[in-house]
Length: 346
Ligand code: 1HN
Image (cartoon, rainbow, N blue to C red; front, side):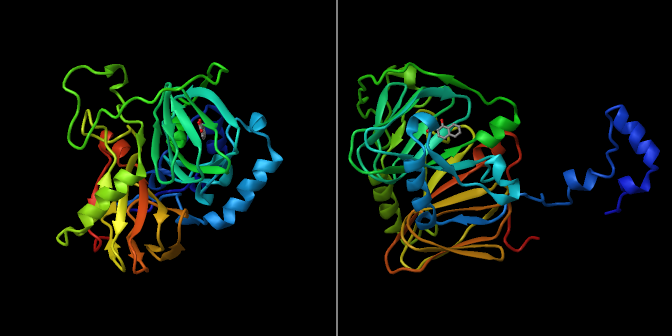
């Protein structure tokens, strides 16, 4: 590809005249915004080790009362996007949130979509549009765009969860805002489980909630499903995707959620995909190789990888490993941006 002229190739007075009229020449930036064949991601391959961050999160619990934080979160920030921008990838935000016994994180709703993946502790719950979602380790709880949510804690130990939001994307689109809810800690009901394996209600039952019919995906179910798939030796990649049972499509609109099981000592080479990805270890010890970077992850560690990376997951234990995965594929597919490449391609 032809090397194009730079700003320095132009007379200084000409560049100043352009600037004064709020115009810029395209050609000095063209190769940056349209790099040949492969994007140049700002997203760096990063790991956040839970045992290193946990003490700092507990310290936040002592330093900042919940009333002064609203959400007591340490954001897992990717230095490639500058820490203050609070991006794990260009689309995904990640944070570790702490709720102490008796605390309440007040009701609000906002335009970004969020999910929680529970990391530790018992006795807390999130209420989503009045539905009480118990928080147990490994559970996935959705709080989609526009739904009221608050977090409460009736137990007696610290509760920590991983928040995954599409905040960087929504903020970039200048579409991010919040509304404050009623300051009442109301009674919560649990909607009965109406979606079974392969069954949905035929009649309009609770269709007011049908856009997001499942808000809590208990880990126990996901794990059982993975173990069952793994028992079939013909299956190379033991993975389940969290979906909306009414549509059969992704559970949320922008970020896709799935879980992978690695059999004892399994090595899994992932397809190269056009979207960035996040891994969070629910159980086990996993070596994550991303291009030339290696991270050794254990329970509750989190890492991310940029688009088109060569990713290999290795289970170093004689017991299975379980990984929660979040990626940008629903968003990219909706925009027609999604693709996959062979590992041998450049
Ligand atoms: C939010 O609403 C929560 O509800 C957590 O727990 C983290 C980060 C940015 C914007 C909104 C929550 C958030 C957030």
